[in-house]
Length: 513
Image (cartoon, rainbow, N blue to C red; front, side, top):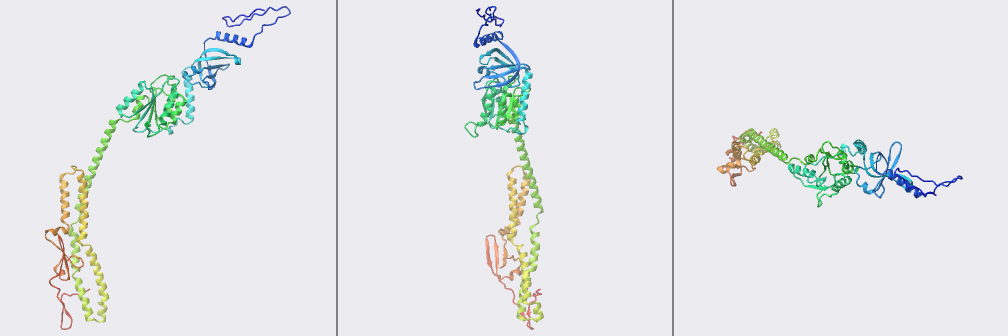
């Protein structure tokens, strides 16, 4: 029997068959492991390192951390595996349907009699493939409503605390802090993350959820606004912000989020899910807070408008008060007519009473008694007494005193309001207002009592203004500036004299009714 020979550089196996006799010879026998090993050595020797382009088919991720998937085209399928250590360094997440270029080596798996590719590097097959995959993911997330404009919230006008998710060592955080100091300084909480590479998506999503997990009012203040920021770069550098886990974390955030990833021309999926997109990190800081100096200028303008409006309102009210003061009637005009009516009615009452007494004493005839009977006289007296009471009620000094006091209170209140805005009403207006107040004070009937005058009232409390009326009163009350005293008239009214025919002599009696 002739021994076998190892594979040559050509990668083919040459087996020397044992010389067979004319009647036939037996072929050499190999074990399954020998055949598998020979095939493995041939494949690994021939395809030590290859680059394969294809579309990703089935993808499996067991708990071991390895990734198993298929590379296929329209005619064949090649099994591939990415070991756990290599899988942690992949930039793009492997998804079914991606067109990639995989670099690695071919080998066999004796346990299932199949060959496969051990992938060491893998990348999307050009920017077009990445953009196609990005568009496919964008449409899927948009179909779930994560990018709807109706779910976006308004940013707070002036947040108390701002949370920033970015790298602590880059220029982004310095630009944000510098811009905040210029516009309106606010406390900033930084959550450091990796903004590029395989760990970017997981760290950014964890930071957003971490900020939302802070309890309000705790030891660590909960931000009112979040800024997720990163500088510019290629689509591969920004790919972590296109991952689904980051987009969902932004969409689920209860705190408003500003996305500031890349430069103005860069667009990532996080921009669609955020409540506001900023073209640059510096622009995000400008969106977060207003300009303090502009706010102060606005407040100053509003304060000036308030003062001007208050001064104009006081001036208008002062002019209105002066117009009303000119329209007030003179007290003499108000009291004169009623005093005249009282003077005309007052003297008739005593004569009516005397006539009633005489009618009772003389016992007039039936017709005269019917005409001047006690009931008729009593009714007439009561009606006139009621009229007299109404007229006297309007002429009481206390009523006029209250009216003048109310007018004085109004004047004093308006004067106090005008005094609070000192300096804005001229001296001339203040002098006119004082003169008006003094004029009103002089109209007070009781004010003249201090100058030696007195008010005389009858027994019923009505004011007696004539000596003739005072002579008919049984008792008088005189009011001075410091109190009141009672008095009795010295001359009682003359008694009626009887005539020869029995009639009373009273030339001033006149007619009762």
